Length: 527
Image 1: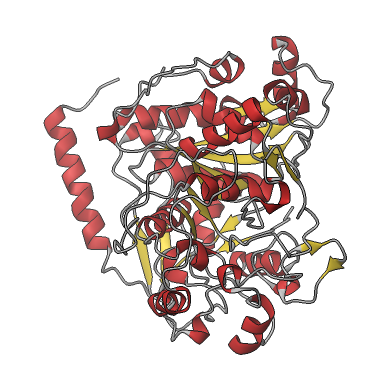
Image 2 (image 1 turned 180 degrees about the vertical axis):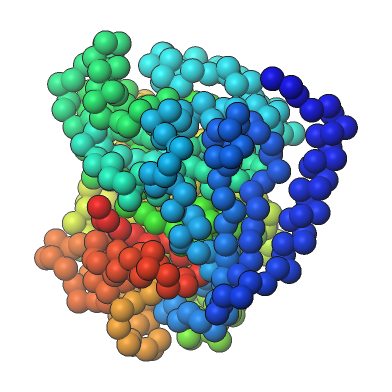
């Protein structure tokens, strides 16, 4: 196949960049102004069908939705992207449905991603065979495979089950998610499926059995990026831990992933019923940038409450100032102390250094407040094992296990479970270990909508009624399931929680053409 010369490739890249600049001012005749955003100028290696340019993916369309959408009752749209630009759903998803000439069963998304990474000079396309690495013993001192000057590498891990139903709507979404995350931006992202096989008696150490289960449970196009595990896998890794269910230990498989694929500095854990109304890569990058810019001063106290813009003139800075004024110099500074525990995080400087942490990557990013479970009546309040101080151990919990964790944090969690038998339930695991090790953890105040007319003061009285260090906690907070059942609260009408139907309703409206700014909707159980 003919390959253009280096000078030709440079000329083409320059032309593409000029085209991108020109498109920023393009206006269509739609009722809402529309911007056409071309894909990254990554070249043919970042195309799904590099030898068939006529099958290239179409450009994305953005609508100018300023003053066209309702403001969220919680959080700030700008932490996930531009609140005045709404990505058109049809431009994202329609091209990933069955269309003439595109046979999706011929696509190998893992190979496409590795080709893209190789073009970016991040890795060799033969850096690893995914299944081989996953099923081999961990090398204790495995070296980094990417030099740091290339930048951090990020894995996006989709958590799924072996009986997950891959409908056409879900397949279109997954294809769009992979393309937006990896192909359309020049960053070090790769996407994986982590598949939980429910039958604990299946011997996934047997190559024949593993391959058979993979073929039976994962669509052909995703198999070279899918990794299988079951309870037997987790028991072998963590024999000192008594529970291995997804509810109890959602992060164990992710901990194993971080041990097997040590080239990734950070790992996003996403659920299959999460939807983004904004560009996936841009949303994750925006959340990362927000977290990086946060100071550690009173960070845990900010993490422990909901940001209600209606109470702070729509200013997160004003919210932060209010927390500082309330907490002063009494907030968590460095690791929280507990007996017989050696923190591995950085030594905190003098409290006079109020901007400590600004510019530091967060070891943990979450999207719900990280609250103190003590005194909440949470059903897992007393579920803590292997810690000298038992239930008095300082802890934090954040509902919904959609997070970004550093490899450092995941390995500290893994070490504690393997060597000391220290463990807590899923939604308290990374939060608590970050607190005890003195690592930077940030709650991103993403926009959350409620399908009701609750005003800011009433909402605050319901969801921020705990003590100062954990305002979203306290006795029986409505976002938790308590030992006495559900507490009264607004969450059944919210766009982001672990149950309820509002998220699915908003996603359907988005698919039907309603402009929505960058948001995270969960759960969406569309078929």
